[in-house]
Image 1 (tube, rainbow, N blue to C red):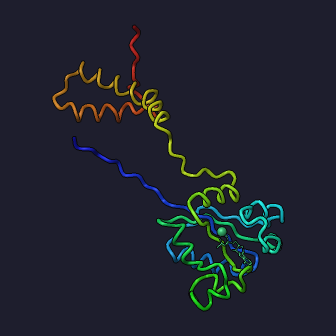
Image 2 (image 1 turned 90 degrees about the horizontal axis):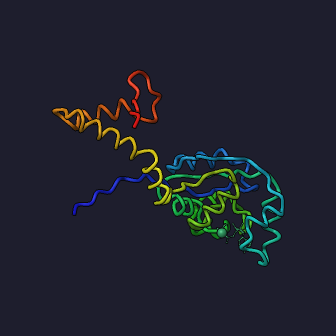
Length: 210
Ligand code: ADP
Ligand code: MG
């Protein structure tokens, strides 16, 4: 049997941070972001407390650089942004480059960490590592944001049962009663006139009393 697939538009999103050492260069970096084909759906400037930085970098807890990292990240304002485009996570990672800015200057001189960072710690920008990290980090920086929730199969079926099936049943019953010459055109017209999401002006659906 022939199967039809409806197209689904899905744009990947990642979290970018302009760290305190590059805050003065934020406009320049945002310009590069836009020229690299990203859109910036969300952006906020904030300063995190050392405790918030510990939470954000909880996976690194216990490492020798952990305290320097939380001190550095809480030392001034940062710009947190969601970046969207296809393959956003990997693309942003390739633009920012390797973690150590000093080494990146040798190996990847064009990357943002080479251009704007100065050390292993002060490396100017952050990018989410994986899809799951991106979801978690976006939630951290933008707690109110809704991240592409796909409705469950049950929710879809419930929507169809409540809102679509009654309209179709009514229209198809009318179609049978009217027996128009061109049923497709007639039904399309009926649906336009009886779109339940539109305010009804004139000719409303009359519900017949049983
Ligand atoms: P990334 O930021 O690329 O995800 P990591 O998760 O390994 O890199 O580390 C988080 C941050 O901690 C780095 O961006 C950097 O600021 C800092 N960092 C990582 N490793 C070191 C290190 N060995 N010395 C100092 N700072 C480090
Ligand atoms: Mg990391």
